[in-house]
Image (cartoon, rainbow, N blue to C red; front, side):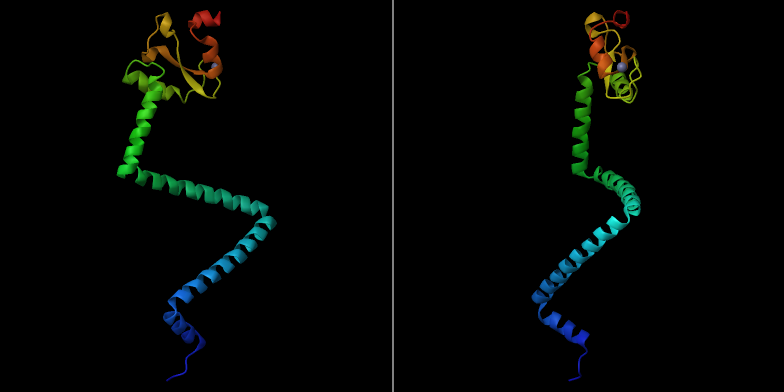
Length: 165
Ligand SMILES: [Zn+2]
């Protein structure tokens, strides 16, 4: 029988003791991981600026990847179902503002990204009926505009002129 090198002996032992070999691998991995994580922590403490840069880069990398994953996910049956539920929730939410038809629904969705048409505030936007519903106004798109919560609450059921006066 030829003499075995240490590496060959080790390989033989691993082949004959797969369970023990796995346990050993795990222990080595854990010990190594602890060491690595300590080293990483120390390096991060010593290089705060570089750490910030790397974190930033990793954020953007993951962001791009998660967009791809999301796109693929939306093509699966489950993704489609979830997206469909989301869409119907969006329609429900918009329906709460009492918009007349699909055109005003679409317009209301666009308005949500506009600043307040009364004061220019770019915060959270509500859909306002310029002529209030209980004052003869309707839900058609020409009667809708973007209003911040503050203006929307202050205007309430008043007509535009009535409120501005
Ligand atoms: Zn406003």
